[in-house]
Image (cartoon, rainbow, N blue to C red):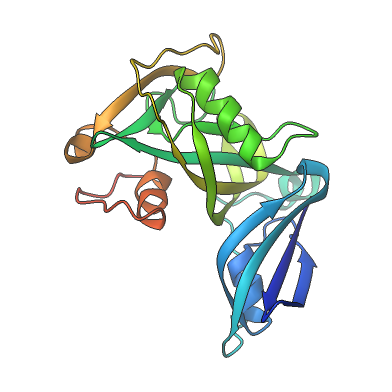
Length: 228
């Protein structure tokens, strides 16, 4: 569960639990606030994401889900699932660290940022350090939250009928001693890991969220957008 808090001039002015299918920025705007400069505190079970907020004109809250539609019977039976994960943009010597997804992920063969689900009792920062080590054999530090991003999927996938809410805490992190990546989590969701020069990112089939995440972290994307 994630509680979103908005603060202004040192005081909390808005607070809510992020519901299934919701986006924190959309919910804040519906309440008349725009969020920036996020930080996360606490383990997964009691995680609080705080934004500095500025007043804006409220916008109607609309919840949309990507993916093909379901029949009424399928919609009645599907169980909503929310997954909270932490990812990192790690850049060293003009290259960004990427990991290749295995089969069973719904994005077999595509490249993604290193990261994954936050374990019970774990903070987002600790999850980043662990995941980067497991997926690429790299030690990172100076982990900083950049944004809280979401994606809502309701439809059919390789795993069956889903009502899936992906909540991603996007970070930047520093790798002080970059080395040849090694996948330690053998048999998991990572097939390969690689330092990819920024000017060659367009040569890889990346997941659609990678360009968005890189730009949010201040790394420009100068290549065609990947297909969904």
